[in-house]
View 1 (cartoon, rainbow, N blue to C red):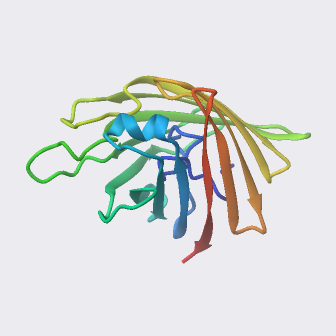
View 2 (cartoon, one colour; view 1 turned 90 degrees about the vertical axis):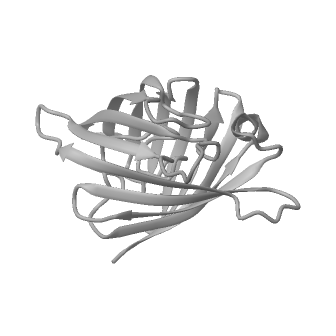
Length: 216
């Protein structure tokens, strides 16, 4: 069972910062924005806090795509960093087998790879365990990312994974390792079409935001 709103900081469906093998329902559009603290924007060559604006579309039951713009806070006339991502599901979750997906992000560039700051090519599996009590669902995810594509910066390189606990359909708590840091986060659903996401990267630095969802 998949959360109604499950966008992560990377703009595709996932936990707090890592992707999962799950894909939103066919025809679902999600749009929103997340705050990125300077501690993490500076790693990508930025000199201040930033806001990432995104839009994601699930097209067919096996494909999810997103476009994200990261713009620095304060005086700045540039359009910002642009990132296209997609995720393809190859195996749908069954009673005993996890779902399996392949994803890629920030892989387009013109002549040089200096603007590709969030590149990743990864494999990921996710298994849900339904629970008939206060904790509605337990989700487990594991994945492996590669830096095989030339870029100025990469994410999810090596093993990553996490666990999610969903409480009464509207509240979700997440603990994960994104191959670099341990993160904790929470997501809440409001009025069926709004979600809020917040948490701490490296267990110290707040990042979060929210968005809206509608069905085509």
